[in-house]
Length: 112
Length: 113
Image (tube, rainbow over all chains, first blue to last red; front, side, top):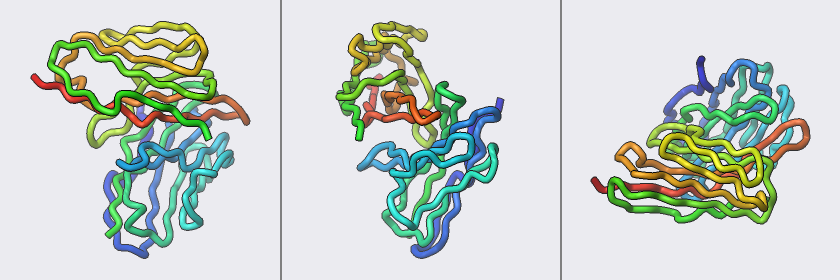
């Protein structure tokens, strides 16, 4: 079975550019999560969706961050404009109902 | 918000030694999970605990869900080189038709051969 699929795996961009991270959750899962991981702050939940509806976006750091889930099999996390402090590994994860959460391999974002 | 205190932050051990790490919280969780993260990868689930007091094993790994539902520990017996990585505890909350995880800060395990 395919796990959570994220793209790209690595992204290097210049400050001020728009960045879009993509995620395909596990088929049949109805909850999707975006996390950010840094050395300083560890794993932080940015936003999560249930049945394609954003439930809690209190972890989104600023208005520069936005996330969408247009259908059950796709989600995006967008940063516009990007800043060096956004450099981190971004994980997408999914689960079904109250089941276990599975993570993708992450996107390593570097903003220079 | 909810926070998990995971300890120790790092461990340096000899191959073959046993390892113990734990997480505590001021909040009650419905489920406790333990994940391992290898370099360049996402966290991978090791053990899930669903009931207070539950003790579960997965090979050389043993984890327990504290009776108060506010803590959990993970033990690794007879460590081997592939156990190296970062271990995270996570408490799972239910509500609003969905659930989310709260993560500990992680325990970085280093093994000297």
